[in-house]
Amino acid sequence: MLDHLPEPVPHMQFATRDWQTLGGTSAGKALSLAGLGRPVYLRTLLGDDAPGRRIREALSATTIELDVVPALETERHLNLMTPAGERVSLYLATPDSSGDAPDDDMLTAMSRAAAIVLDLSAEGRRLIAAAQRQRETTLWVDLHDYDGRDDFHRPFLEAADVVLCSEDRLPRPTEFLRSCVESGASLAVCTRGADGAVAVDDSGRVYNVPAPSATVIDTNGAGDAFFAGLLNARLDGRGVIESLEAASAATVPVLASRHLHPLLESVLPASGAL
Image (cartoon, rainbow, N blue to C red):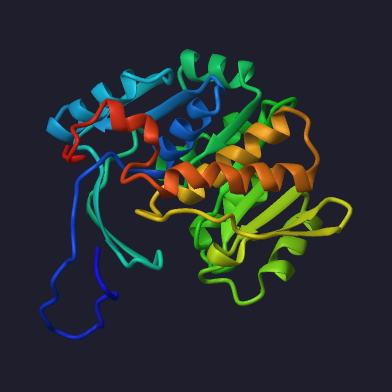
C-alpha cells in the first residue's frame, strides 16, 4: 500500500504496509460466487511450484470445484495500491496456455453450467468457440479497464452475452455500454468506483446505482465481487436494478478484507502470506 502511485521517474518510495495473498480475477469471482452459495467450477492454470501448491490448498479448502491445467509456472503479480483504490499491477510471472483443445471434463462442465465466465487470458480466448456452442448458456465477460480499442479484448467482447467493465480508461462509459447492446449483448455494466455503476439493458434503458457505504481495507477483488453478485442475482431471476444493488452489496465484505474474499481468512495464515 502506497500513499500515492509512483511517478514515471527514477525515485525511492516507501510502502505504508504490504502483504501476500491469493490473487487473480478468476479466483476472485469464484470465491465471491462460492461465498454467495453458488456452486462453482473453476478451471485455471497452475504450476507445480510453491505458489501453485499453496493456491491449490487454499481453493481446495472452499466449496469450489477446482480443475487445474498444468503450467510451467504459476502467475504472480505485484499490486501497487493507494487507499483510494488506484492500482498498478506488475506481472512477475505468467503461465503458458495449454494450447490443447477443450477436454471432455471442460466441455461437460460448460454444458451443465448455468453461466460461463471467461477470463481475459490466452486460455480464456482459446475457449471462446467452445463456450459459444453452448447455445442455452449465457456467456459473461469482464473487460476490466478496457479502453474501447485493444484488439486482444475484441473476441471476448464480440462473443459476450453480458459485458462488464470499469470506467478507468473509458472516456464515455454509457456510450460504450450502448454500443455493446447494439452489438448483441443483453446487458452491459460499467463500474465507477466510488461513483457506483451504470448499466444499459437490451431495451436501451440506462440504470444507475450508487456505491455502498463500506469499510475499505483493500479494494482488490471488489470488482470481482460486484461481477459475482450481479451474476448470482441474474441467475436468481432478479431484475436489472435489483441485481445491480445486489452486486454493490456483494463488494462490502470484500472491501473490508485483505484477501480476495473473507472465505480465505480461515484458510490462509493470519498475515495473509503465501
